[in-house]
Length: 155
Image (cartoon, rainbow, N blue to C red; front, side, top):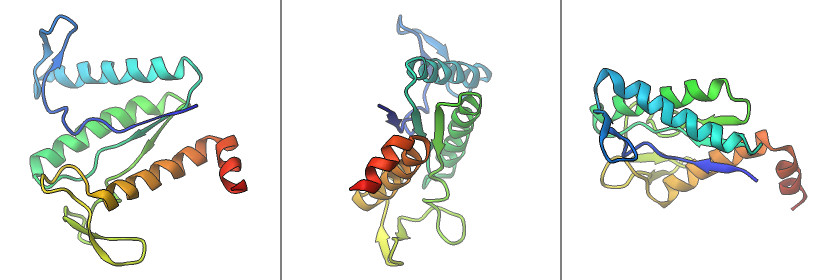
């Protein structure tokens, strides 16, 4: 009925072809274009079946270079999604920054309590962090899929 995905946190490496050879080394001028083509191919494969795709963008990361890469990868995905009506994105950056706009392991939950949101690696999440991202993805799915939203309201 729908595809919901979150990938990219570990995509800070080269783009490889089916033969295992590097098509574009990470950080090279060719990498962004090669990555964009992969993203677009995936989006087109999903939407060619008239299935909505919810793509969860990357969050802020502990390491500044990882955050820079996160922004770049999310920008590629966001740009590819703009011309595809069945593809929606979920911004996680705003959900994962502290009051000063930076990275923090601890964030406030829906009740305003400070909770450990991030895993020790500064990339992944704890259970409450994943629940928060999941809630945002579900809200987006309800937004784009009217029958699903109506079913949820009936429960």
